[in-house]
Length: 372
Image 1 (cartoon, rainbow, N blue to C red):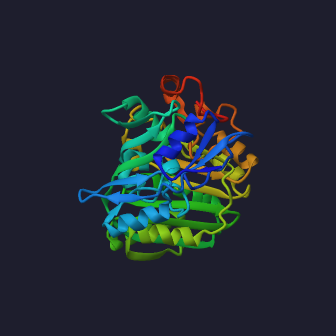
Image 2: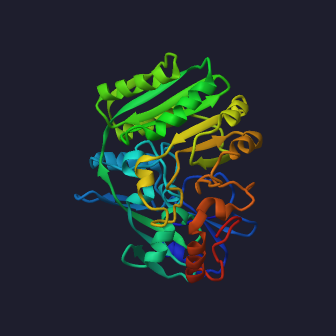
Image 3: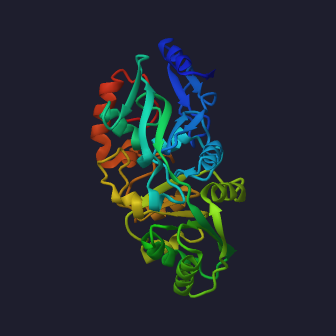
């Protein structure tokens, strides 16, 4: 492992000729290095600067806990995940789903430019106007495939004040709960995100709302009426986005590693849902909203027509759900069991991504299983 504390360190590592695998300081669900590879640990590159106009330059090794804290100090926010030890770079390059993404889009949708060290050791700045094909590829498929990203520049948003939503209980009928959630949550107002986890009869709903608290309560009451049973919602209004993110990071320690996942463009059928309940932990993330208002070909992130993302705990539950699935998988949840990972991650964007790969890394200096 090589600890990089500057862009020059990254350049030197690449020019050494050893095959390198970048690590942004966070984690990945699979090991993308092979024997003999040099892991570039970029955690030493972690500075964050926020301009008065809200544009934030974030070095590649920064973790989300630090990002949210520094943005909060400047009165700014960014749609991204909850895990405080998640690296901002890996998250963004694979898309970046989060609690306010239905309103503000993916993390990569807020990306303005990136600094990248290429396979020949050259350093480029890419944006919509400079190296546009590379910039396109980085927004949804950039994790370690085209170069080593050393910094990112984001168009942040004024930090939202949110209402935190949580409910935990033993559901009398989890099948009904899932059926209602999948029909309701993806079509709820963009300002509301409500995600569902089912593990046996244990049910957990977590989310955030940018709507006034009273309007949020009314919407959740509507959801409970459709479920046909009381849902013990606990709401905390007036929380900055950074505080909500931190609270959920603390509330879910020891969350099991994701094993299989898939995007869904339609609700699970009654037969599939009936068979699926009881097959282990099921985690549903609501999509729709701003995620889907960008064309699938506008960025490398191809999953712009989905209702929800489902994470399953084992192969059996994934196989059952897959019957109703889109065949598409979130790039940030890599799955080595997929028959064709690149097609699942990138869909119709795969051909263009391969052309970008050929242009920027024809000798496949940056390579790993399931790379384009």
